[in-house]
Length: 377
Image 1 (tube, one colour):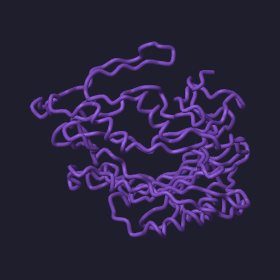
Image 2 (spheres, one colour; image 1 turned 90 degrees about the horizontal axis):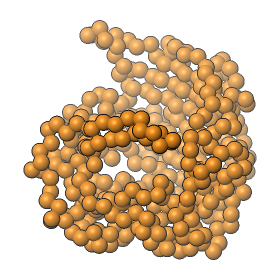
Image 3 (cartoon, one colour; image 1 turned 90 degrees about the vertical axis):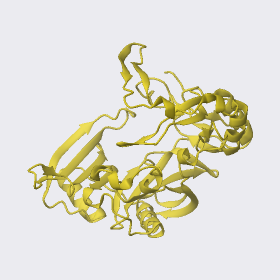
Image 4 (spheres, one colour; image 1 turned 180 degrees about the horizontal axis):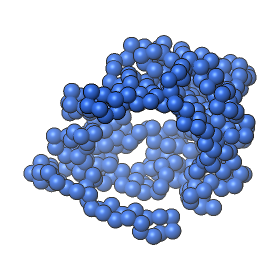
């Protein structure tokens, strides 16, 4: 899967690039013999046993093309989508733990929003907001200006981005030493000044062990979120994501990782709004907490603006019907995988069964039980 030919095609069907991925150093003797593989039927049984379809709302279903349709042209949808897709070891017929991403911990919350707003219309206001709301000291950091951009995914809101970074210090070799570098990004609605997202990247903590517990980080994230939720009660589904350190494959020699390849100690949370007990996939607020300092180092406000009227979620097809449709559209395919993690490669390739490419999206319409077809406007 990670060798062979690559072809790039634009939206008009024109080939824009073509190359063969280099295969230097591949020992053909390490590849498992396909004749030893279990049957596809056995693999599909194991795959189906692990596959879990979850019910979600989508305010804006997927579409084809480069540009988002005009306001009002997309219809909200209620869909089933796989929580994760297991990779089946073709030699044993069992799921490979290495390729199963750890499930985020999920919890339902009812919070009382305070209706506060984060507003910054000028660089001065942005710097003051960073200091007051997030405790960011910009002393010694260089301001790189404010730039307005038209987001690729949304033609309705023009954004303004403010950026700061530390001045690189030279190391003993005379080259810039980025191990103490800090970068700050603040993105706002260019018209209203409402903050859309914020991110602090502090390189000094890279590779260090977390000292803040997930429970403490969760409390910090929830307290922060309550301030900026719309005033009134809000039902949310919170997901806590495993740290990057937990997702490093067992065959990786961590002592050989370069400094820039080591993860930052950050604990990430996503809070999806809930309608009639079902989470809205594309209406969420994300928060990142530094696991060394306990401070908020990132957030994205994906719940601003008026919500889209959503369909009633009664009379949906069972999850098993959605699973059968997914399996029909994505039959398993026998392939080799030879995973890499930065400059390190697994000792040998795996022979596995994975879903074959099918429809562009994995959503199944919850009312019809059929794969959701993206709109082509």
